[in-house]
Length: 51
Image 1 (tube, rainbow, N blue to C red):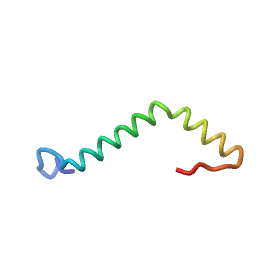
Image 2: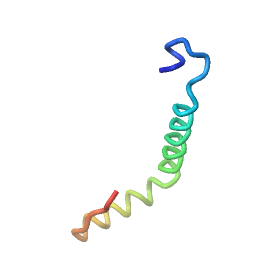
Image 3: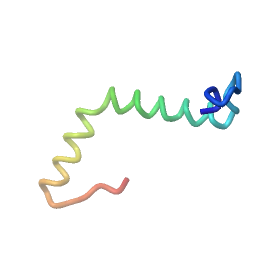
């Protein structure tokens, strides 16, 4: 958004947030199968995950 508004560089806080979001997305991409299996196992046993 900062770039679209004409700012040549996003403010540092926005860049840090974006970097965190990308890291989370990368982790999920690498671990999606395990996460899905874990949630399915919990659901099947009647438990829930606290996120």
